[in-house]
Image 1 (tube, one colour):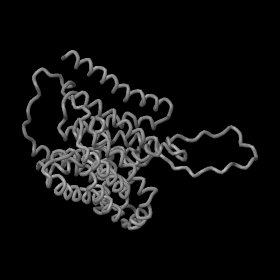
Image 2 (cartoon, rainbow, N blue to C red):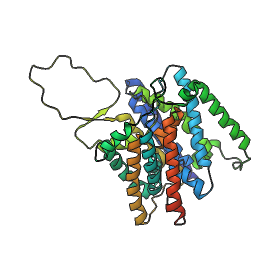
Image 3 (cartoon, one colour):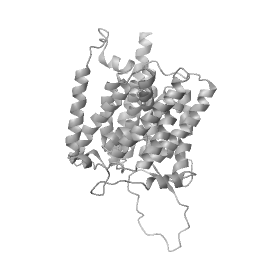
Image 4 (cartoon, rainbow, N blue to C red):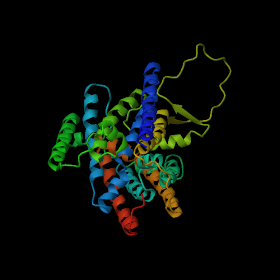
Length: 400
């Protein structure tokens, strides 16, 4: 049995190495940097599964189990991201572009998003990694999410979306409201202060944990066991910095996000979609003939980088779950699956109004110190707790 597990671990390790190294090398050699989204997504799914860091579950478990460790793990990821973003910004590798304070969009979107995550059994990134491990409810929720986002972006709720976005508060210099604009302190200094405070609290709260089994290799423990949320948080924070560099090299100006990647993957079936790779378009050697150009239907732009991130998250999560013996397609009561689907639509609507989810608006948005994203996080948390109290605590158990 041990030999069988070792064999499985070896070929899964080889698969992971290929998924990380090959796209990176090809992107570097060809300039197709959007391909680096594959290792970013693969590792993101792997780390989320290892730490079981679903934003919705992290919030709900504070009420359900009086356990804030996952919420703390998410904050660790944010704090590490802040320091990393400050470093690469000071080096001139990226330009920080925090989201503006669209207070109506963030409050309404956050409230709908937070409520939907409880019914769906996870946020967008949470459902992506749980689906990779075989969670049927998460798969159903993922089917509903792009429908909800599309309703806001292009459908019946698009006018409401535009109206909500018209309510904006700007900083004194006309830019977005951030912790830096409110305090007058530079971003890098605030990042160091917040990260230092986080480290100090962590050391103060440190307790002696269970020691690993004697003789068990460190790599074996990392691959076969779940990780404490704070460890996964550190790894995700480091990955978020690499993801930011990958995104910028691919023509994006914002760090890690998944909401529009889910929508764009859904929209690939449309004939009017134009895939943006971040590479300059080829210029024809000679101008075309004098014939009048044929009318072209308006195309909707989708990001190859975002699509590859969300697609790669699923196999990354599966590898992590398979190594831990957690990759199982488990049956769920039909009523839960149906609820998860409609919960997924609500998650999509909320994420559409808020132009992001836990990853784009909290992990990346808080790391950029956007006050609007802090407002979104507060609205999401309160709505999640309210629905958790009614739907989960009220019926006597968790369904995620």
